[in-house]
Image (cartoon, rainbow, N blue to C red):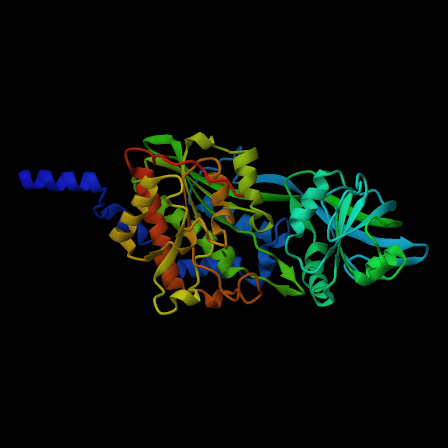
Length: 481
């Protein structure tokens, strides 16, 4: 009897888990075959890369909603599985400088970037500062800086904005770097952007030109322009705004004992659509996470049918607009949480879990775990024990480092929960050469490895949803710089 009591004491003290045969039973419903079946639909050409607000994203939303309905989940958005909302799509129109009939065209002769509204042609005054702004009054004017490289420009732009300048013009001396900017960023900036907010008229107006354009503006050789000289020209930048409808997809499984405490399992189901006439199928990003959510949801649904449903409620949510700036998850957390965030015990976010990166080519049974210890020591320890008990994957914390230059902790949907002090775990397979390219396709997915990763998330969710006490928060949220 003493030995049994001592063993139980160790289990309580160290949080060690015994295998739950019920959990193991239902985890077996998660299979590589089912994952592939779902992904072969969502990452097919028919879905056109699931661009936010476009046909393929709508098709994916319907597919996911139908799956939740087939599982018997509650439709928690006033009887719907779709949380619909509008984004503002902003596209750039005509951008140019003009002197009489002579024009210099945006994205051909220079780059322009701003979120501020414009009102057609206007006369703007540009004042030459060179490489230092000195004591010149720039109120209401454009400051013209000379730059030999791109580094440090953001700081100068912010300083100019704070001083009341109407805008900032950077004259790049390096012609090769300037041409690179035109080809790399010009097409990107011309693409429509999506936002939850209305246009920010305090945004800095930023122009990036070269020596030839600057000489044209000032009407003299670039080397002859002196600090303090000014020139007035006509500038035009048109923005075209329109509302774009999109939707998060939510399926709700009510808890048997603690229904008001909610675990949220997320992935983003949008991708980047069609670029240069090629479909970006997004099999890994984030078709893999989305179908993992569908399979985990099915495992819990099967448990509920057998009267083994979770004690806490689980909200399975695939979100839209992640590729546009985590917009769908931000809409849920900041604008319209269906369930109070204070009742949300944790978020498990799955974004890219179908591939093996170069660092693990010799040992593919791994997963990058990010954020598990940022807000809750208890959640991190639970995650470790679940893995040791059920899946024995290599939990790689490389990208959990606060000094990680990739800043992955801030780059997927879990962050909108973490900033609201909801403990999170972000599961990630790392990047690869097919990231955001048309070559991110189904045949490159490692489904057997993906199955193991899905089971790790399932068992982690099972423990969180069925433990006696909710996960404790013992650390504060870290804001993005």
